[in-house]
Length: 163
Image 1: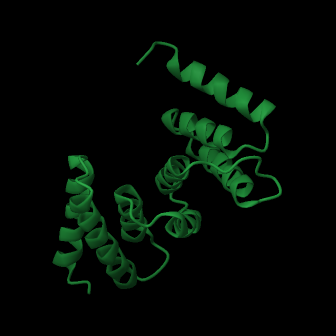
Image 2: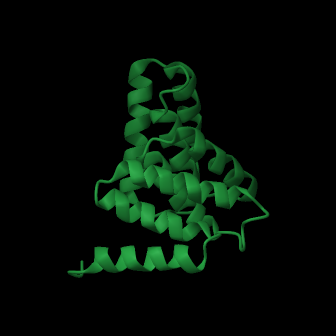
């Protein structure tokens, strides 16, 4: 909420890209800034560059954390790069499939993805939402907003009759 926070965030992200060119996190951070500036097309390009670096083991200097990868998925979904989001989610699933936020993002990806049939996507979204809510209870997750959003998607799927 600082007065010059956006400008500082932009400067730091640009410096990270300049000095750590093969690190995908700088690109993600700058994409986040571009989204806050409502420069979505630039954000898409930056996210695609981040993903390219993240997926190339010969370029990647250090593996992003699970949390950084979840943040990448959030940004990819925000700019509607669903195919890319699914690629990251598939890798995350192999790392840890017992994470509430992971299942929530998978639910969102299937729920909003326009590429496949709505029925197929919503069937997958239902399964992911149910798994998300299961893990929510098991680990006693405390994000009520996430839970409410997941329940709302599940309700819309049920109301649509999608199986």
